[in-house]
Image 1: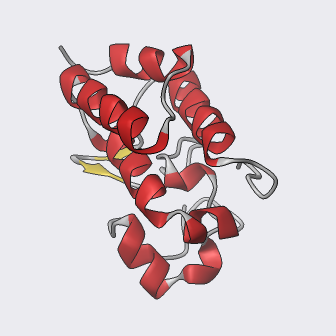
Image 2 (image 1 turned 90 degrees about the vertical axis):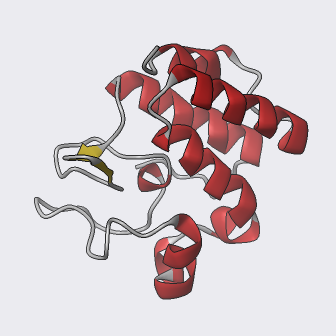
Amino acid sequence: MIDISEMTIQQAGDAIVGKLVEQGAQCMDGDNCVYSDGRGNHCSIGWVLLYDEDENGVPFDAFVNVCRLMEDNPEALPQLVLDNIDFFSELQSFHDFHAAQGREDCRIGMIDSYNVGTSEVWKKWVKLGNP
């Protein structure tokens, strides 16, 4: 997990996207993106969730979106996420796009909206998407 308690959204975004690049692919359960696959891979938000992971993965519904997670399990989210839910929802979408073009469009939108996504690690995640 990544401790984002002392980070800006730019720092948190860079750290999370860096982990996505390290794992090399989306965190999936069949055709669905999940917060954790129980094997050390996570989606964007999965990297910062506040819980003790075991072999069963996350202790709540792994198929809900970030806003629903905030409603149902706010204790699982760091304060930075709660304070910037729109940003982290878009960061989750950045993970969820399969196609490189969808990832690039999302990245450009995040640059426009939040002035994040400019570092090389974001571009590497885009390149890992499907053509």
